[in-house]
Length: 467
Image (cartoon, rainbow, N blue to C red; front, side, top):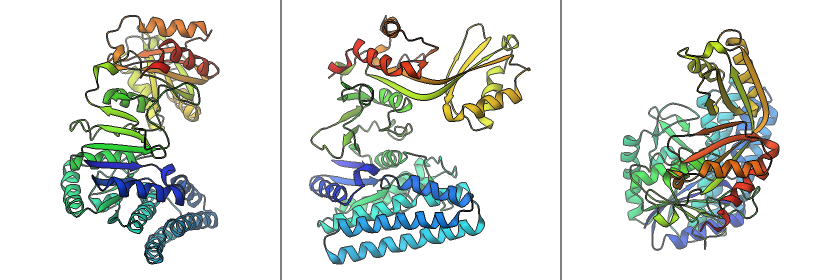
């Protein structure tokens, strides 16, 4: 098979894990053509973001100290991962040249005393740039032919929207296939840095947090892969968060649309934009565990088996949010009211997670992240209170609970079962929203009731017996 296999940061967070990943790829490559995509070692991207904040505060000593810590971490991993001294020296030389470039960038940013979106993308791409060398050289150490490539080097061309870039697929497709075809023909395993590409001017761009998945699916689409495997530290997509529901189960098979909903409702295993490059090609995906390769994980496909079409597949919860209830008689029948509210919040960089409007048009309820709550309320009070809004009511500490499953479409009585189960737990529902696709029902409860409601719904729909 032609495979794209992506490894997350926890999969390569120690020398032993790096050796295990390399051994797995070494054996997999004997019967398959493989392109591997790697994240930064876990914690490194956070450290690089912290460095950018220290530069903005003018704290250059701490920024330099943290940079040296990252370089030291990778050098130690290199020394512990590679057995043959010749390969170890080559790897340390390669890491050294990347580290020099990182330190030069840091020096420039400190001199300027500012962090632009462009320089931030360049900075945070270094975690992946260092990781790909670890995996590639460990594979060479095991006797496989391998080459490390950044997103830019493999040919991923994006727009110039730094921090949230999108690949320009037609150009990317031509360049990626041109780069990878000769390598695969010679049985060389490309190890590609996830999360980044370059715009048409050659400047490094990133796809946003979790964007290594997006890199993997972009490459899979370009080479017409047979399958794509996302390897992390979980066995697959689950019926609920196992931290909340002890008897949560791994789902054997889900559809693209269900997986997209799960990603949007907080399934940490997938970046929400991951599926964009796959939809037209209908390339199947597996979500698997690096540390349990016997388990085939969750199979994500455009056309799932009829037998897997259960009413509800998953109960998801997004915690730590705030609810803003906006009211006012002058909102009724006034065109553009919702647009004014949403644009006011957009201007201060607040993302709206969920909306519900009463048919009377006299109130709109909005859910935002708790960290954005103060900013959102201030913006609405300063710009709209006393004009189109007469009253603002705020509820802190709320959870969004969503039930996801394509089998809900057209099934009578799902909602009544949901809210009857919630009522039995004595929990009050403060807001409800259901899309016309009927793929999910989402509602809001106080955080204090979240755990008992998720468990009750998991039991009501017998998700522990799903497979």
